[in-house]
Image (cartoon, rainbow, N blue to C red):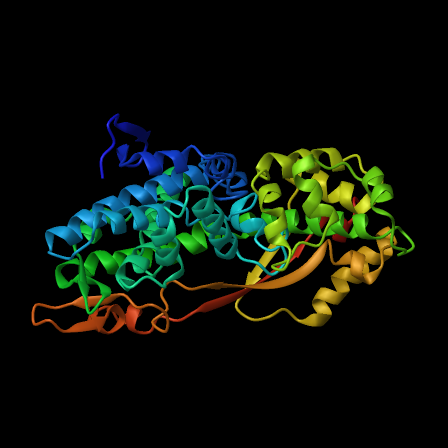
Length: 422
């Protein structure tokens, strides 16, 4: 691939990132992709780590850069990747997060019901393929795993893909959490292909071990940090309450759309998703609406809703804007139902709320940490004799062999509401 006028981006992680051809440059400049500049990579994590203000745009560019290096490595090892396939895999990884909504994972299922960001990304890929006269057909197949060369899909989506290699180092850099730093250069240099599966040469095994451990630590220290979750749960509750208000009046009667709009301020971009029930069945007709939605829409509404006539909504929004987050207790076992109910009853009594309304201020949820899943697409180590083995078996680290999904339980409650103002 060639680009007569070389376009470069200056990235704080890798230095200069080159855009390899004109089609990719057109995609980067497309409004669908530019929206990612207005979506934070780590949602509300900046409330805990103030530097975590980087965007999905930066991450997507970084993942594309690493994929370019991976393609170069595989070609040096005589793995055939045509120019068309290279462009396809670069586009697939560049657009892998284009379906993310505002604040990334925080509102994954709050904006569109029962539809993941990967599903929406695939819809955007289909639409872009139409707009660019079929030039993204290979990218679409690589993205959804139907292309004839499976290892290209694994570069985009797997347990050792370019997405993860980028976000670990990038998120570590911007949060200042050094436990997430990995040697992505060495891992990429050790990549290989065996039987159409992406593998890692045995010399890179220790770097892969470090990668898995770093990912586990980053989940507990950053992605599943209890205060981060507190803020994200609070934002979810705000959207939940807003949708409840816009679907019913105080007596529970359905209202006409025009009456509902008079009750709650909403930006034009968020309007569709607040006042309509968007699902997999009707998302296609609202894809362009989704393409206009970003973090600024949500937070503009949150600030406006601080003055809402609805006491619950205004209180939740004031909590988020002024960082009066839920108090969080974490434990390995589920919380006693009576303990949770007692907290709810305390809130109900003090503020004259129903049982369902008290759940905006007291609730318990489980979270899981999957650092590595051998039952999914495995990370296989390639030895000199040509044999392969899963990293969990190949490693001499007992920790990896016994790795399993860890589940913890969070109890969130508003301390001020439960304990009162004295």
